[in-house]
Amino acid sequence: MVENSSLSKLLDESRKLASHVGTSNIPMVERNLDTLSAESRNLATKSNRSLAPLDSKTRAFFAEGGVDPGELMEKSNSALIDSINIQTQQTFNTNVENYISGQYENCIANAIDNSQIMALEDFDTSMEFNIQQAWEETKKKVFDGMGQPIVPMEYDVFDSSKGSSLGVQTYERGFSDEASGNSKFLGAKGIVQANPRVEKYTKVIRTLNNNRINKIPTNLSFEFSSATQQTTTLTGDKQLSKCWELLETITGKDSAQPVGKIDLTSGNASSAEKRQELVDRSRKFLENSYLQYIDRIIEQNPREASIGGIPSIHNKIRGFLQVKFSKSSNIPEYIEVYDNEAVWAHMYYLVRCGKLEEMLDYALGIEDVLADSDPSFISYLRHYIESPNRTLDASSQERISASVGMMRVNMRVVDPYKFSVYKVIGRCDLARKTVHEVIQTTEDYIWHQVC
Image (cartoon, rainbow, N blue to C red):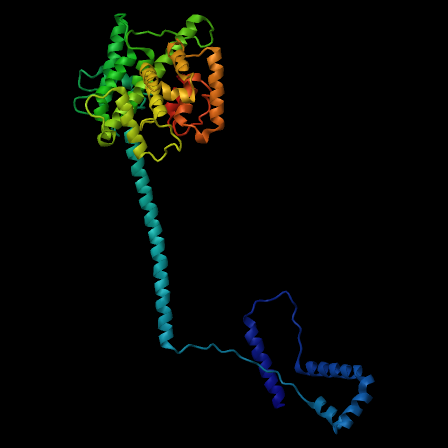
């Protein structure tokens, strides 16, 4: 009875322990101790029956070993297997030093993580601020270069109550109210601070309008070019000045309409002549620009150039080549040199600057040297200079094209400047930019197409 009461007590306690677990979809099976005991004995009886065929052999085995099988069976059947309830108890670490060390390491790790998060947030904030500041500065430079006025925040250019929906009437009022001191662009109080170039442009437009009223022709490109040159020192924008200079050179500065309207689709002689004139003026601008570039390089490197005095075009080219070959890392591997001078590079830069007569004189001075490689080069050059549209006759064109083809096959042992001179004179394969040692800029490539 004592054992049954203890088992009943354990059963009740186990039910109390499992009472907090949520209900399950599996149905509960009610078993009391008497039922469990009876079923266990039935299970044992069934197992013994299954071993019945082996009973005689088992008894003989135990008998040989000196064991009484009957007594063993009685003891095994009467044996009770008590359930063991193993309770797990939480163990606590009593090592204070290890605990403090662990907490210290956790604090350091958390501090590092927080520092990384704060650093990333600060970086994003700083990057966004720098990008915004750089954009504002870039936008201001763009507006300054375009001559865009800075409008105060309290004034809305697109306010329909003060003008049209696109601010056209507002701009008109800005110019018309200048005398009253209320100009939106050039007011005396500086409501809007305009770029210095705006005032020069405004004067050009006013002059153009007055000349139109009086039917006086105006060279607009020349006027704008002069206006930009006057303000280049203030704005520092030389590229825009170069653009107006290019337009002035192409259109001509001697008259208001020197070239006239060009019909690109017409094939008559007049249109062809005008197109050729336009090409010649464009080429002239590129050649003058490159000569200015050579002068600027010599001025920046007087020691390397070492030309001194008022040099001729040949001395300028020599000084320029000295600077170029001493500082450039892109020096051709093979250059033909005569008397310590790169003769083909010298002639190339002469024709690049439009100095054809000087190039012919230079070639005649070294005619013996040139005749060793190509006796017909001097005749090619003469035909090229004397031709009104810079073209060779059919025979010369065929021969120089063959020479260019042979050079292209053996480019590793050919002076690239010689190859470029032949391409220009013979106008051979100009669409291919194959001489990277010589053709290095967009202006060089364009010049090769119009030369």
